[in-house]
Image (tube, rainbow, N blue to C red; front, top):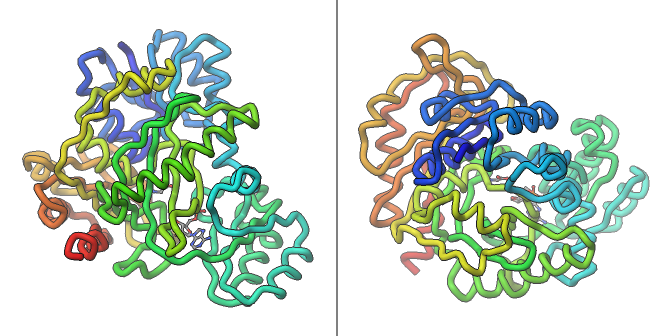
Length: 426
Ligand code: AMP
Ligand code: GLY
């Protein structure tokens, strides 16, 4: 088979790396890809939102299966466009992708179907949003309703913070049209978990649990990022809790989408807050998580092509996912300054030394090839991922590998996976 992976992050490198191990795969293309995916096949210089260009490429190359990494093309309707041309593609339609594309849509769906989530209100008018905030005493979260690449969310301590967030979103228009509406929510307390589930319209097959680390600094301090590291499994997600998440959240969500006539096919990622009152949905993403995918694929034993085929064909009931029991930990190395301004073009050393380590993979994200040299080209640069017999062992391996890598200004958190320990010791 010929496979096309769309995207250029660590998630896409990890998916392409796993797909490359499939006995069904003859050639992997990645658009636009990165120096990591270049080693697995061929990078194609097409942007992730060039839907017409990607479809034309898939036709010309007779691609058997396209896998979409980021949400933007999904929300823009890449699956609808490919299907209309008879091209096989993994992911939800634009209608179903609204679950991530519009927080207002997502929250309304959850509320109508009594699926546990933070209480919320949606506002299109700034004065109404302000008046609402002034009447509330509890801590709030203010979100741009549209897609803002994870940056349009403000977790507020005070009314002043919430009013400032409304100004940033609706007056300063920091996220453009994504700020036409704001969603204001009660602030939930608890530990977060990422539940990635395969959904074929009818059947739901959750993968192993994972946990992300969104803040830039140790101890969850500093501004939020796309994700600074992840591990799997997350011991906070016990068997009982997973059963509750399935029964009270995933199953009713998939039913609700069918009811709204936008059946879901693809990977459904539930961002969950484990509150004292039970698991609640923080958000849905309509794609694999980054960096959760990196540790997850290192643990996945099942052929990923077969996983995608079973999902597309509505045959998840015939699929058996097999996992390496050993945990995996992924540590993101970012550019100095990220998630704010950062410089690019810094030469990276140590990649060859890390490539020789067993049970360690370095997934590329914001990297570029400059002659013989790999240089930085983005905020999240690499995700060093390791597998070990225990979480502390996987962590040690990942950090030993990270220490071999060098570039000017590099930063990584030193506490990825530490949250797991309190559950293990408990
Ligand atoms: P979202 O993109 O909606 O998942 O929000 C990004 C991050 O903001 C989440 O991963 C949480 O850390 C935080 N967050 C979002 N909504 C809430 C909420 N209602 N209560 C507490 N934290 C939240
Ligand atoms: N790891 C968070 C995300 O993929 O949205």
